[in-house]
Amino acid sequence: MEMIALTSENRSILGPLEGLLAADNVEAYLVGGFVRDALLGRETKDIDLAVKADAHMLARKFADALGASFVSLDTERDVARIVGAIDGDEFVIDVARLDGDAKSDMARRDFTINAMAVPLHKSSLTRSEILDHHGARKDLRERTIRAVQEDVFRRDPVRMMRAVRLSAVLGFEIDADTRDLIRQSSTSIVSSSPERVREELLATLAARGARDSIRLMDDLGLLSVLIPEIDASRGVTQPKAHHYYDVFNHLVEAVGFVEVLLDSEPNGGIVHEMMPKFDGMTEYFSSYATDMHSRLTLLKLTGLLHDIGKPATKSIEQSGRVRFFEHSTVGEEMAKVVLRRMRFGRSGVSMTGAMIRHHLRPRQMAARNEMPTNRAIHRYFRDVGNVALDTLYLNMADFLAAKGPDLTRDDMARGSKVISHILKVGQNIEHVTKPRRSDPRVLLDGNDIMREFGLSPGPKIGDVLSVVGEAEATGKVNTIEEAVRLATQYLESEDGGA
Image 1 (cartoon, rainbow, N blue to C red):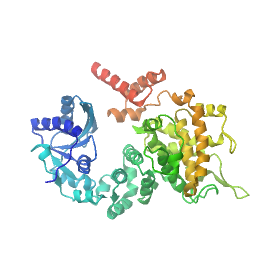
Image 2: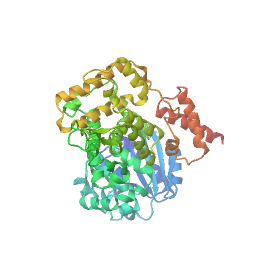
Image 3: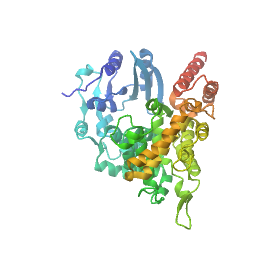
Image 4: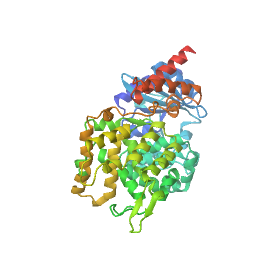
């Protein structure tokens, strides 16, 4: 009998949970990604639990018993979340009502590798069998993502994006039949919740190999449906300074170069070897930017969109020279439309727009073969604000994507010299460490509040934003984590006084 390997953190969470289930005599199963990751030996603190009971009622009771927070995720489907910590180990438990038996529940899941269950109600976890009716363990061994049923994407189109994300995160291949199913169903993704689509896209970009993931999305027909504006860039030729890439392929390559520039693990190439660096760079790009995702993830997305305005602004002079006047300004507005359609938070839309608007500026601050003046650098950090550092690396990725495989060590040295100089001068500029914000409520917006606390639209959202905005404007909060903490305290005090 095959057993799942549990970390000490998993056991510290599951032990008390199993005791609570046994005390209430609740039929329950560990399901989905938790079982998959445990079999793969991947560390995870996200637990999926299917229960033969009222999931909301049970989750509230467990949250109280574990000293954790309760969040309602879906009242219609009866799905709730418990968020907390045991002995310093954070955990997230999603509790869903089990309709029918475990076998029928697994048949309704998306991919075979997620269609396994471990019963918690009959015996100790360490002795429980793994229920597998769809060849999940075989597909895990073969590193394959396979749809459980032919109608999986009709029942939930977001699963198509999840297939791409799992491929990126796990390094698995999507099998041929499942790829065909996705191509046939790709247009239905627009019927899904924009927030869920956005989350899958960002989680995909957060994983290594983001360029290949974008290529996969394109091959499956998903990219054109999610970002139809990008189709105009296909086949649009660029000046000779660019490699053979048209605008579309230049955008995709820029995503890859953002990742190579900022990957925390050396890859042995000249790009990583010679890239400009600054103190605290890894921590900076790992910090939250928007929708609980990092600056690096948002920068990859911005790389995909940075020249999206080029097709609309292309002109050819009598000499034959190709120009794209104002493409940064036009691209900024187009990108904002894309992000708002996916319900990005206010800060994400603002940050991406600013990076696109200024992405050419670092190399335009001085004549060719000259370094920008200190005054020009001060103005740059003043004007670009809280994405000034990010934009330097977008500029570098843009330069590298233009060079493509023609890149030489001399090219890299010339490209990095300008960025290194700007970083050196800028390291003592206040705007680098304390970037200005023109919007006093940029840390959190209404969508962020509703998503974080499971609230519905209403006056309470405005009250929370007012409290957080005033605190940020006066310097009392400076990070998303601090803003969420303040919002939590405010909501708890309001509930206590009701």
